[in-house]
Amino acid sequence: MRSDRELIEAVNTGDADAFEQLYHRYRDWVYRLAWRFTVNHEDALDVLQETFTYLLAKFPGFELTASMTTFLYPAVRHLALNVRRRKSAHHAGDEALNDIPISESSPTSRSELAAALGALSLEQREVVLMRFVDGLALSEISIALGIPLNTVKSRLYNALRSLRDDPRTRDYFLD
Image (spheres, rainbow, N blue to C red):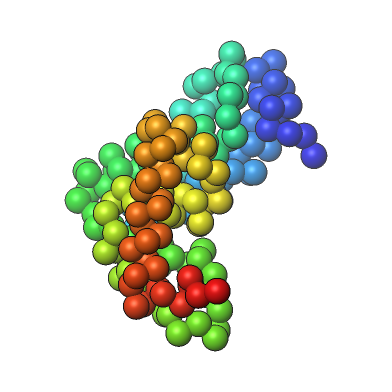
């Protein structure tokens, strides 16, 4: 399997199959992220299409300086929030949390977890989801959001402290 950088080099030379491989590699991730912002299947599909149209327009001459998800995150976020603003959609509820594993023995339900996350500021919630749902490193979150690394750390620390103090999510933090 070729790496993202190898695929990008191939697309830069006109290899349409390489772009298709990038699309297949990241389409589900882009869709899930778009859905989390738009909370609508059709809108998420539109954002998916717009995201890859945006990426295709970068060629030839595109150079990947971070991971592909770090590069794509701000584009998906921007496109999805524009769709959401246009439609005045509401923020994702319980269904946006489907990727967070909750064990059967956990006393915390998805709705309780959603409520606890909903109590966080938008900035804190976004960093928590990027870190634990999307699996991005702190440095990748910093790049994707265009904010200093220490701001990412502060938002994550404060969010986790709030979640640790919340009775609905306290069990996640027990030793």
